[in-house]
Image (cartoon, rainbow, N blue to C red; front, side, top):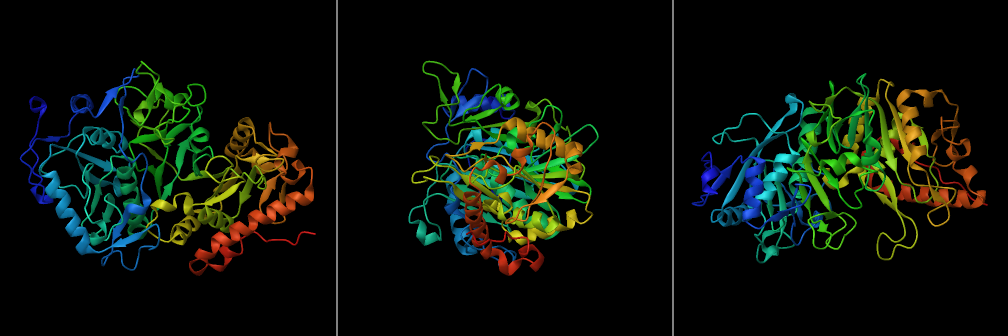
Length: 535
């Protein structure tokens, strides 16, 4: 590969003193060629490189730590999500990783996060593998000009094959680890080839920097807009329909996963998409399906026997099969990845209890409460031992990536909603007429009609009823949606059974919210559901 080296990059400032080749800012064809030569993957018949990420096919949240220092000590929301590690242990691990990388051939890529230039963060990824450099190219914004002598603001150091002996001696739990150092602005990744750690490492950094230092709301959501520049945001955990509903042929995609919201509007953090591939179907998700072409990176997929054709239904390696591609692989996009302030915000939840209305309009404090709650539900069969609906709460619809207390993000949301012009909707894409196993999942066509009616403003013209337990205001009419579908209780044959189920879910909300009570204002606590006595 020496014949395609173009620039020399000195990494001694990172304590990496390699005498091996350092491949700087390779083009995608060069990276694909390098990956194939190094047996990191194979080409699928779509033209995309297919690579396996090794032992880890997803993030390892119990192995992620944040350095506790003067910047983070009194600001980070410490706990099971944000685990502390000492500066001393970080330095010891960093020294071992860089010594390891000094004996390796390396790939170096400079990129940018945040489409809004006012908030841009320059980054450099030093990786052991070529496919990781493809991922960085695809997922972050690609600057027109780079200089190997520059020292970008943040650095990702990824040593895929390095594992530490005696991890407890260094303040970590396992041979693999992900460490964030906000003082040195380094993300140190070791022992895992899963590229999502790179993406979410930068997202976590931005979730600290933008809200804490710039009062910009960072968000785990997708965003799109129309020809009139009316932006919409879609929040939702896995299985709620975020990707499906935000991919609208009549609206342009701003971004599919991570955004910021400042006084001028909404901007994408990324330059690409990292989409799930499981059961990827050309009819249901044509945009993603057609984006799997040369330049894209497939992760942990299987092929049909004897072919190089991806079998998206095959999950023998993992259910978390992925594809990373530049956003330009999608046709209907906003080229600069920037939109105006949102006119509508959708919180998506797949309520398997069959309790929540298909759509509710939220007040400001209700929006804050449900934003902090981040509710959806898992259904029987998705996990061993799950025999009935199981409530899942993830603060701000992305708790795993929040270094600050969720209330801080919610207060920024309050400020954004203060004008009263932005509508926030809670959308239940889950079950009606009973819980999972008895009722049925609401038709996608109904949900699409609800989203359309919210976007065009017609849903606001409906009369609204108030839910007796959750206090939610839900419309009684919506174009192309049967009236009875909009009222959750009307769809249940047994009204007492509905109230009992609604109370059960309300108790779960209240119990989950207890851990936030000391940090949220009284008016947000008042938006909590009210458990009723059931006779």
